[in-house]
Length: 431
Image (cartoon, rainbow, N blue to C red; front, side, top):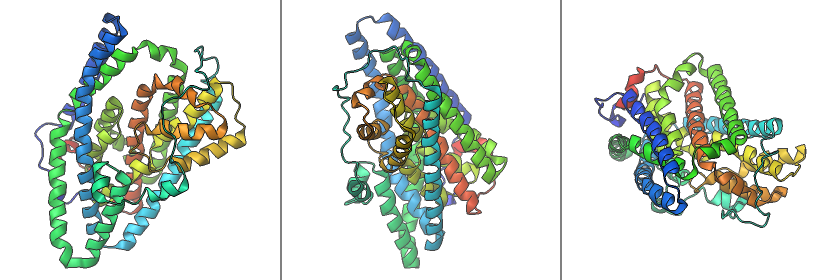
């Protein structure tokens, strides 16, 4: 459980109330978006009207991003300082990366198997974009040199300004280890950082009260612009992908149950609010603060959660991993391109490398797919096929990313023998 210094005062409202408001915002957004799509016939006017919704969504996501950098820094530094043992830090880090690699391979392989079994790209019935068309996504910068050097910040101020989570984690680890090494002389700084963590959690509480409004705006905009009919057109593709996400959730649940036992069933109840928030806003980043609090209430020590969870946002995006192989081979099928089994295995290994550390890249999954497609003779123009429904797919993969990282954090806590008794589920909102 978190230390008293890192807890924020309890709120009077229950966790279930915010969840109900978010769900209400989602349903209202569906209704309003559908009404606008049906009543405004001129595309230009529809786009202009729907774009007003993005003001609300963008403000909310900016507020979330405003929180992320100081929250990650403060909780991670305090967590490492309270470990008091660099050997424990190294052990947790090794176990964390081992789980991340295994989960990434599982997700990529599941996407590959499903797309080969279901063939959602065959008989699509849509005109294919010309192979010379551009999807407007940059695929540069994916090489070993840039991948490794990007991990280390040249300036922590710059890293925080751009919300480079992995760079913030690297700097925070150095600071936390240094505070442990200097002993009593570092205690005043640890106290200051603990106070910062408490303040940022309180700020999180304020920001999250706007979540239902942001969910309403995000869903209304997506439905108004695209209409519900587009889901019918891409029914096989969207349905197959969501089937893959359901199977991945089941596999994660089974793996979690093998490690922590029957408590795994309760974990998903604690994650209800952050998962719904990530799904509604199509942003796993938006759910980070709430996920941290949910794990805290479930019994995961803050020092472990604040270390594993930020790393997961760069190395353990399970929903996005499944999407990468699934979408890449879907496009190949649509163009009638046969990718041999050996090349598909090579694709999985390539995506294992190129997908790491790109969480801060806008539309990161599509950027990684664009970078890999050329290596296997798949036209980049094929991305235009999935752009129309990418928002709806992003909703599912964002929610899955939250589940995957929460499971990983809980498993690491159990492996460390530090998974504590859970508080009542109503306590999620009180942290």
